[in-house]
Image (cartoon, rainbow, N blue to C red; front, side):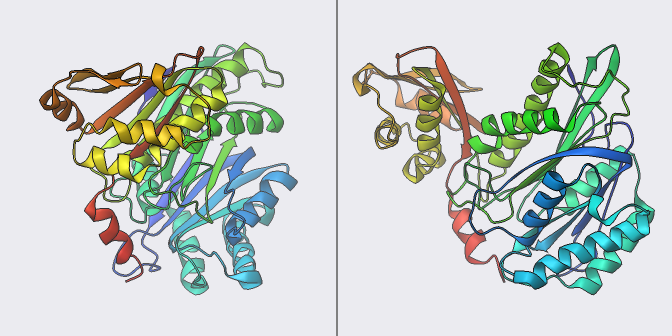
Amino acid sequence: MKKTEGGVTAAKGFLAAGLAAGIKKGNTKDMAMVYSEIPCVAAGTFTTNVVKAAPVKWDQHIVYDQSVAQAIVCNSGVANACTGEEGYSYCRQTAEEAAGVLGIPTESVLVASTGVIGKQLPMEILKKGVKNLVPLLSPTREAGTLAAQSIMTTDTVSKEVAVELELGGKKVTIGGMCKGSGMIHPNMCTMLGFVTTDAAISKELLQKALSQVVADTYNMVSVDGDTSTNDTVLLLANGMAENPVITEENEDYKEFVKALLYVNTCLAKKIAADGEGASALFEVKVVGAATKEQAVTLSKSVITSNLTKAAIFGHDANWGRILCAMGYSGAKFDPEKVDLYFESAAGKLQIIENGVALDYSEEEATKILSEKEVTAIADIKMGEASATAWGCDLTYEYVKINADYRS
């Protein structure tokens, strides 16, 4: 496996486009389309929020009840959440519009929305946007980037990644893009992720692979503790790499999962690093756990602690906040056996040993915590399991962004 340039257009047979349709104020890009030259098998994972946006319900219908999918239409600016039957009908109308222009079945078009909750989609603008997107569809790197830019809301950067690997003697590519910056919390986040691959794989194993990697990637990210109504990750596989079709959990399947994990880990970390107002990516590793579940619970508890996030923003090695967050997580461990380290590009420093502070240099700790990417490593000395969670620091800018969001 090797990293390569690109995003959703990196895999063979995938085209993309993005433009400013007029949903947002000003000439801001706000609509994107991803299209495969041939039908794909599709997999998806969706928000755990009881309040599910209309496009989530539509996509669940397509992923769970239909055999193939071929296109994704995404708008930014209006979430189409809490919009009732009218909002759901707009999903169908969007799919019908795209299907008509592309010459494919309505039930092979997935839709996604992100933005303000409670507003109805401006359908005339949306339909016109769909018509204008189709002639722009292109397999180029630039088209993929434009699509990634067009799904952003409060994101400050677009998010893309792609890898190549060999399966059955054939070159296979997996590429993806995502958006997400705020209303981010484990068990999906206010994020949209679109991943494409030219691998030939059964629909059942594609879904299994995606569900498996989501647990260790997007579900390990938190920015602010709010779980969104619109969270969606879609994975399309068109088989154009012509590798032997993966129908069992063999070595090719394992290699595919490994590459898919890498792609989605990269995207998840990009979301955490671009958290609203963030100045640093904050990574928490719990090692030496008795079980994976224990490590997951502990790392998530630390990554969602506002006090810890504020300390990271202040470059303050306030280790007590980390130990405290671990203590109220609900996971059982012995705090008097915990070793804690801080690590970044500036070095690595042990802060506590067996639950007691060491005579460390505050100056060195501040230097380590002043980097753009900071890691806290907690060894609880109970076993061999581990887990990693990602988040960001909590800054003044986060409050400002969310106080002004609708205006």
